Amino acid sequence: QVQLVESGGGLVQPGGSLRLSCAASGFTLDYYAIGWFRQAPGKEREGVSCISSSDGSTYYADSVKGRFTISRDNAKNTVYLQMNSLKPEDTAVYYCAASDKLECGSSWLWYDYWGQGTQVTVSS
Image (cartoon, rainbow, N blue to C red):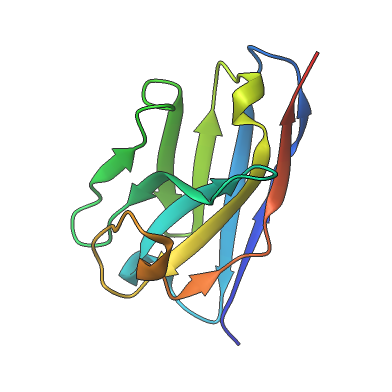
């Protein structure tokens, strides 16, 4: 059974950090491009970051560039999203997604498998 499970969300003060994890079961993440998306209440789902399968290239939305870092640990079949200098506008449900197309895509339609999401709340 193919499954993605996110963890690591929570409540953090502005300026704080969180590390999200996306663990896969039923398939090998190394063969998939992995994207992180987020969705805030009343807003559309937006792409945050992605790491390709072909050469490990990484991509970031302008709003998180320089603050977020995506990485993968193939031995643990897990992808991480390190989030630093968090802002209230980063508050959202964060989802990881896998695409068998190897390269990253900006649209959520590009991705084949999705996790259930983890809530990130940035508030004082």
